[in-house]
Length: 101
Image 1 (cartoon, rainbow, N blue to C red):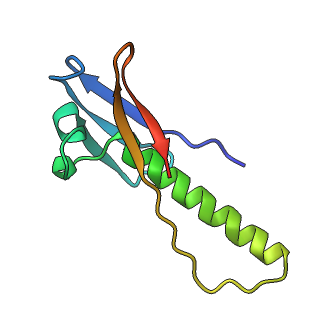
Image 2: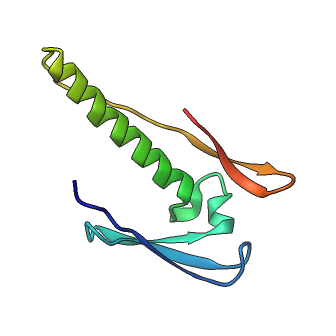
Image 3: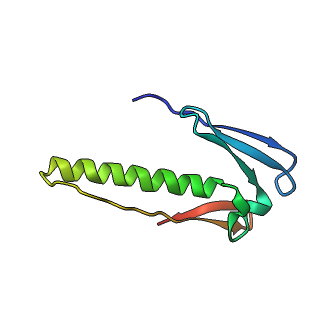
């Protein structure tokens, strides 16, 4: 399997900075990021690491599930998977993604 690449460019500090994440391998786009948008309820039209991890988890799980169902002889017509990844404060470490469900 090929290696996939993404690139992030960031200017400024953690709370006052902003940046862009680029889906380099696929060339599908470059998306804005900032901590204020990361910590807002609606995301302010920007993506963040938690959303990207949730996308990776849901797509990987779905693809593996359909592979296993196919190996077991099932005919897969449709599968929909969602994932929630949360960012929580950690007093000694700032913050971290601590849950994926």
